[in-house]
Each structure stands twice: as structure tokens, then as C-alpha cells.
Image 1: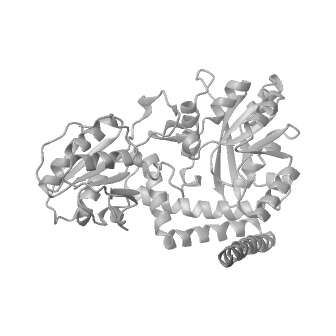
Image 2: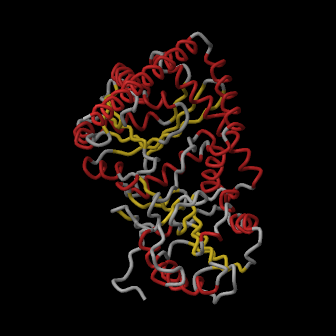
Image 3: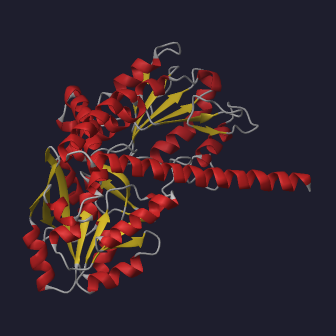
Length: 466
């Protein structure tokens, strides 16, 4: 009984701390918001740019993520100096966009219009007048987000407008955001329940904004985005099929202090509205101003625990657009018996993932395997330099290091090159690895150990592995 009471007290304490923390976050946000209201918009823009520059130097992990994303998207057209500059510019522009968005929340619709230049609105208005199927606005996380949230009043005032919305974790912030969006005439649909509400809105001739560039997880379609396969939202395609609504793409560019240019383009009439075509349209929108995109999350992330599993139920039919496949490095053991035992599993893995590129680092001489490039080095070699050389051999980066070796042979070389994930067998857990697969009781010299390893990573194995 005493334990139950203690547990209840702890849960209550955590709940109170959580509520108090949410209230303090809300109060701090309102305080910052009020202070920004007193400043001219150009000063807020300058302040935001300065904060973004500070974040560039103080947040090395985020800096590496932004640079990696920019390298995937535009690495084939930029050298190292250009990518470094784009990374710095992205921090500066996002700082200015974020702080300006906060100030714009307190502005009236008429005041917001003073900070925006629109291009291409006529085609949206004409489409809404000509048909009753509505319009889908495919949006990117780009530029001033508050302006994006009011895009309906900027394009066609009086037309019913809605957007998909993920409720905020902070209930105070969530209520405030919902209240402000409704005041501006924008309805908000939940990500989980909004599909059935969105279709009637479009059929009645309304506009619907969809942030379609984010990672869609299990519910997405495995589709090329900037040439690399990733989980993409099929929502634009599904709603277009259901309603026949026209599709438009918006690009938001910060052209000078506290002013943004929004260009709107219609989906090409000769092209079917597929998820692949939608992602291509978003690529064009983001490419109008790469530094205005929000690249601070791992956009091309792989499944966290089972990276070789294909979790998406939908698959893209445009495999020809995969010009930047996933890149994996396999590190084979320096112990000949372990290397020989792991070889069948390595060969099977390479065969199962034909759209991935494999590089194999042999710490001991081994037979060459098909469909992979080999690098034979000494066990005491500087792995970091070798991985860096392999990584820089192509315009798009490495994604994953898989250790087919003993725990004692695992190093932190992949962290120095900023490869997002490293996987290996480790019974007691290994801080050098991002994914620890518990080692079975069998020896590392037993081939069944490595079949167990592949199965744990999401590979579909035959009923009786060799």
C-alpha cells in the first residue's frame, strides 16, 4: 500500500511539474511576443538574423544536420565552400523568419500584407471561380510560417480556407494558436481525423493548405525527394483523386528585411498528380531559395531500430528518379573466422537492397563480393580518414555503418564523419553504437549469429537461412 501511495504521489508531482512547465513556457513566449511588438519589423528581422548566426556557432550537431540535408539536395551543384555558405545562410534566414513569424502573429491581416509580395495569385482565383473542386496548396516548411498560415486571406479573402494541424504539446500554446487561426478565418483539421473533413471543404470550392515536405513515417509513400528515397506524404495525391481539386505549389523567399515574396505555380496540366510529381513540385519551390527552407531535422532519416525494413505500405513507381540511393558502409572483422562466418549474411544483405550502394571495409583480406566496392585496410588504420574519404567520393553522404565484427573492433570513427547511424552486436550495450543488437548465445564465428543480426535489423530472411 505504501508503494502505491508513493507511486501516486510521484505521478501527481510529475503532472504538476509538467503543467507548471507548460505555463512558464507560455508566459515566456507571451513576454517575448510583447517585447517584439514594440520593435520595428526590420529590427526584429535583424535581431533574428543575429540569433541565427549565434545558433550556427553554438549548435554543432544542428549545423551538421543542416549541412547534410543541403548536401543531399544540392550537393551535386555545390562545392564544399558553397555548402558551408548555404549552411550559414540557412541559420541566418531561419532565425530571421522565426522571430519575424512571432511578431507577425500579433499583426492584423492588412498589416501582414505590407510585408508580402504575391506572384501567381490570379491563376488560383481564376481556378476557384471556374470550378467547384477547390484548390490544394502544397506548402513547404519555408520562409515566414505565420504568413503561410494566413495564405488564404492573402490569395482569396472570403473563400473557406483550412489547413492540417498537429496539436502542440503545450496546451496553453495550443489553445492560443487555435484561437488565432480561427480569428483569421482558417479552420484547422487534425492530422489523424482531418481527411474526412478536408474532402467536403474542397468539394464546396474551398482552399486547403498542406505542409507536404515533412517526413511521413509509416503512413507515407517511399518516394524520391531530391533524388533520394524517403517517406513522403501521399495526402495531396489522395485528396486530389477524391475531389479533383487543383494543386498549386508555393515558394516563400525572404527578399529583404522583413519582406517576403510568395510565388505560386500550378501543377503542370500534362502531369498526373502523384506523390512523386508533388515532391518534384516541392523540390522546385525549395530550390527558389534554399536558405529559406527549414532543414534542421533529419529529413531523409531511416527507421530508428530496424533500418532494413520497408515500413511504408505505398511504393513510388518512379524508381528512375532515385539518383542518390542510400549509402551503407559494412566493416568486416579483422578476425578471419568471424569475417568468414559473417560473409553469407553480408552477401544476402547486399542482394536484398538493390537500390542501396554498399562500401565494404575489410580489416583482413577477403574475397570480393558482387555489387559492392571494397577497401582493404589494416585493423589499426585511421578509420575516420578512410570513412571521410569514402563519404566525400560522391556528392551525397553516407547514411549508415554496419559493424560485422567483434565489440572490441568498434570505434567512434563514424561519429567524427557525422554518419547518422552505426549498428553492431553488443550484449551489454555500446555507447559508440546508435543501435545495439543483443548478441545471441552462439559464437560470432557461427553464421547463425549474423543471420540473427540481419533479422533484428528488419531483413526478411528465408525460412531456412544458409
